[in-house]
Every structure is written in C-alpha cells, then in structure tokens.
Image (tube, rainbow, N blue to C red; front, side):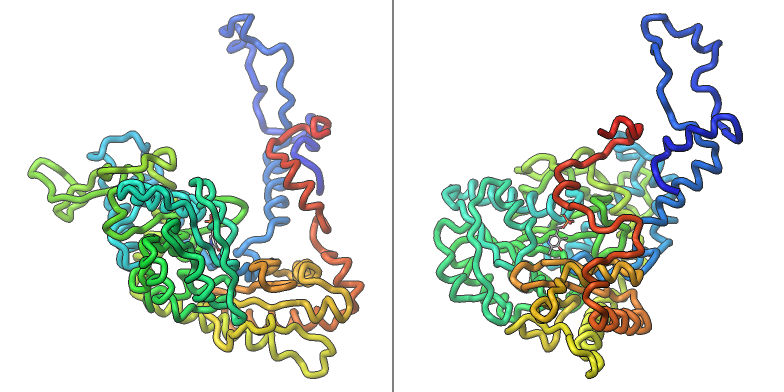
Length: 501
Ligand SMILES: *Cc1c(COP(=O)(O)O)cnc(C)c1O
C-alpha cells in the first residue's frame, strides 16, 4: 500500500470508527463567528486501516531493531528495553518542569547521579545535562570557554583550531560563537601533525577541538603533547566525546589534559537515535570553567528534618552557576534521554570497560574479515594509503577508490547496494580526508555471526556485476533520491496530496 493516510478517504462507508468531528449539540454552544465554514478534511480511516497504514510505514524504515546498523561515528548500539520501562515510570514521565523541587526529588536525584557519573568517567569536575545534542554541547562549552577568556581580559583570542578529520559540527559550533576556524591537516598516517599545530597556535588561540580516537578510529598517542602546545599558547582544549565508546573505563579526557568535553548520551549511553532526535549532549568541564555552565544544574545538600527526599538523607535542588552563560535549552534538557542513559549506566556501569573493549574488538575483527576477502575476488577495497590502523579503536574507514578506478563503482554505490542486503549503509564520505570513504562502527552489541555475515555479503557485492551495484538499491521503497532537492525542499507537514504541489 502506498500513499498517505488521506488515501483512505474512500472507505467512508464501511468500518470507520471515528465519531463525527462535532456533534450538533456542541455546535449550538459555539458562537457563529467562531465556527468554521468548511469541515477540516481529516483522513477518515478506520482503526484497522490506521494501524495498518502506520505499521507498514514503520516497516519501510530501517532501524537498529530491524538489522545491523554499522553507521560509523554514530554508535548505533542496541537500546535495552529496560531503559524504556524505567523512563515510563509515572514518577518520571508524568511530571512537569515547573513542579517544585519537593515534588521531583526522584528525577533530581537521577540528574545529580548522572552529572556525577559523567564527571567521573571523563575526569571533569562539573557537568550540565542541558544541551540536547552533541553539537549543542559543543556550542555550550565553546561559549563557556569564550566567557573564561573574556573574564581574563583575553577576548582578543578569536581562533579555534580543528583538525581536518573533525566532524563538521566542530567548526560549525565554534563559528556560531563568532570564532574563526583554523584547520590543520592530518599527518600522512592520519594522526595530528604536531608541527602544523605548533605553527597554528598563538596568542589569538581560544581553543582546539578534537576527538580522540579520531574519526579514522585511530587513537592519538601524542594527545598530551598536543594539549601542552595549546595550553602553553593560552588556549583551551575541547574533547569531542562522540567516540567515547572506544575509551570508557580505559582512559579519560581529563587525564589527556582536556578542559571541556561533550558526551553523546544517545550514542555511548544507548538510546534510540537517528533522524534528528531525541538526543542528549551534556558537557563536562574542569573547575575553572564550571562557574560559566548554563543554568540550572542539580546540586545536593543534606536534607533538613522536614524535607522528605528520596531516602538517602539528601535534598536535591536546582543551582545557578555564579557566572552562567544562561540557558541553551528550554526547561532542563531532555529529561527522557537522561533517564534512559541513567538506566543503562545503573545496569551496565560496572561493565563499561568491558563494553568499550568489546566495541574495539568488534571493530578490529570486522575490519580484519572485511580486509581479507576471498583471494579469488578480482577486486577488493583497500584502506586509505598511509592510514596506519593495524589496530583501530571502535570504528574504521575503508576507501573504495580502487573499486572506482577499476569499474566506476563508488563508495556511495556500495553503500546503496548494502541496503538491498538488509543493512543500514555505513557512514559515507566522512572523514573527508579518505577518498571514497566508507566508515564502519559495529559496536559491542553485535555478535561474531552478524559480523561474519556482513563481511561475507560485502564481499559478494564486490564480486557482483557493476551494473547491479550502480543501479541499486533494488529492494527499498524508494530508489536513489535527489538529496539536494530533498534537503532544500523539506516537507515536514502532513498535507493532503493535492496541497503538496
Ligand atoms: C555525532 C557526532 C557529533 C555531533 O553530535 P550530535 O549529537 O549528532 O549533535 C560530533 N562529533 C562527532 C565525531 C560525531 O560523531
């Protein structure tokens, strides 16, 4: 069945279970001038038609619940159903942000514990849960750094350094704060070029933003030297925590010398994401930046005699940091996302180190099997030239350049063909420094069987007639879409088909 819900209008006669929109008796109560002249043209589907329509729509969508989702840099891991049970607890999902502290002690305690936990595993001193995306966390932290420089009388610092392998949100966030971006090239092996960094820093450096391991999946062993170079120039170090799944429990950005970090709760700490939400991108900062954090954050003190808290003898309350940059989000962040990640942490907190070990193991295993195709295969993908990565962390990149040279099949074509095999495509053309890049991140929640099957299917694709790959996907509801047109002409409203012109 195709089309929109309005296509069900034909079934008016039979089976529909909606009441008439307005009964005659209620119509009498509405003053004449407020009545609509024409009834709205709502779809008139029956309940079973409605259920079928939306169920079929949902089945056209691909998600982690329907198959392997190796989207690099996005950490698409299984979302434990326990998280959903907990977030639906009435004491959590039936409350309002304007309720007084005395009525929301439970949620405040969860917030507090989450702040503490994130501070501990990142080596930071203070955390706010307010930003609702990693990108918003970046913006928030860079604003805190900006205020820090201003307070020291150093507002002339107007440049933020980012490596060329950075996620696009890094330069975008810094530039939204009014900074100029200095991009430094990666060295041949994909690591930071320390000499390039040395010549980029100066008394105009406000900060450097970097993720470690990098988007190539490569851990930067000289990160302490990089932080020293930036700190000596008076700049601050910002850690893009999107790749946290690779290092949790092993090391932390605090130890590497960073001053601020964001966490993508919807990546590392397991919750459904994709398609723009819902997310949560808390930030953590070292002591010297903490007074600038957006308000409010949650504080804790001993409960007074007449205060009934959560039974741990404490009273949780909202706190406004002394020189706060203000709010970056309405209310107090995405509470549902925070609670889900808190539930994940309470369940798996003692195993976070094992979690990242398995994520790294899975990435290395998958890379190994994908890179060792059947010797009879004529064509196979190579890693980008010069990219070291005998050992990667949680994700890895492959360049499809040899394939393109051999028969014109690009990375994008291979990604499209993977859809026919029932997989989500890997991340495409990112990082941009890898030509014809495909980036894979299996995460810790996939089994060896899934990875073996995926590698096998990948090799089958490489051995296929190029025409089949070039014209793929063949099994999806829509084929290749014009992405530019779709992005420029976003249709976000449900309109009747004739209104779509
Ligand atoms: C996902 C990601 C971001 C941005 O996070 P959002 O939550 O999508 O805004 C930043 N950097 C890297 C490396 C990422 O993978």
